[in-house]
Length: 92
Image 1 (cartoon, one colour):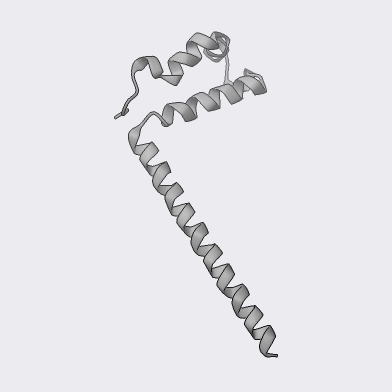
Image 2 (cartoon, rainbow, N blue to C red):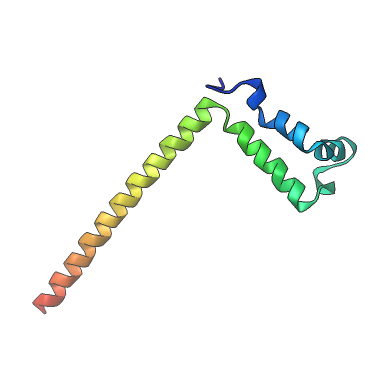
């Protein structure tokens, strides 16, 4: 399912309209025939295409939330370790 996206929002369609030379090159050759800039545009299109799916966006959001929580936990552990080291240093 592509929550909120219509066919007019399709990154592949936009690539076709904005960069027809990329598709022409691919119809006659391989991705290796593209310039670096064209390869980047193609990869960006594919990423945007995948991101149109709700399940993918949900997975990315969930992973980002897990990352933020893990980073917060790490900072807490680092602060606790630093406090412990400071206390240990004071008692010596």
